[in-house]
Picture 1 (spheres, each protein chain N blue to C red):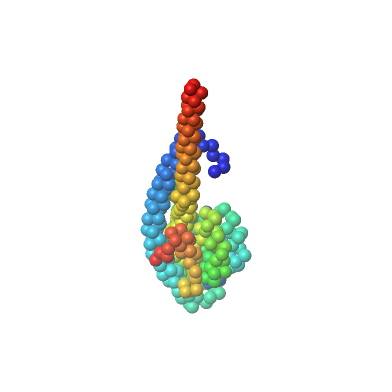
Picture 2 (picture 1 turned 90 degrees about the horizontal axis):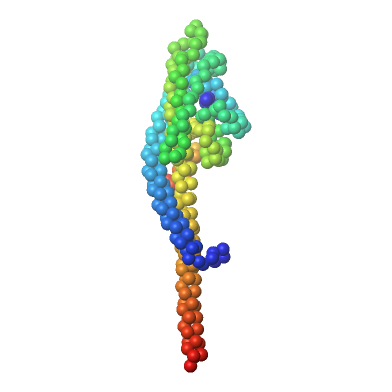
Length: 206
Length: 95
């Protein structure tokens, strides 16, 4: 045991540290459990949102194909290229148990304007389907972002809990027993020394 | 903030209609987009999901924004990077 001076002061100090570590371990493992339970809810939500998104993406693809069949692929691609509308997302941070989680809000966006003469209703249909699709994509992004942040936090918390449980606290316990034994040994030595001196003194007097 | 897309021509056309102007067709753009701070969401679609997999996994563990949404074409050939993250966090496969 290097770096440890077996004194009573040290003993008291390490006892205090051990109490703190145990308390911290308890708090952290509670945090971990809470995180994991909300993590599971989130995973369920994510699955649903993803299924929804896949369906909508499929629909949007089909609508675009229909428009292409009616107007020709090149024309549709051309129109798509020329659409100048840009929908922005607003990012807000949400705080769940001390973790910053991004939350996205998509601007509504208006139907883009293009020439009525050169397009058919199918093109309008395709655009409106595509716009709806983007809403779902942003929703999935919000949820998956939360999953990502929460997952990372869980990993970190787990590592801390384990470090306390398997390394830090056992080490403190070891040091504690070491100091206690050293102190006891010193007491025994002292006791013996006193006895010995007393005996010597008595011999002297005789 | 904006949305960006890396995908094939069809996907790009579709997202353009939806109001996304940052559309790219090369996987090399990934690093560049990830570094930008005006992009909130990056959609990676189709074959690019598999090609960029290791980069996506790393990004998910190390950085916050942009959030990457994968849009695989064939689900069977796609290895879900979010699922990987879930396994890392809780140690078990969650359905």
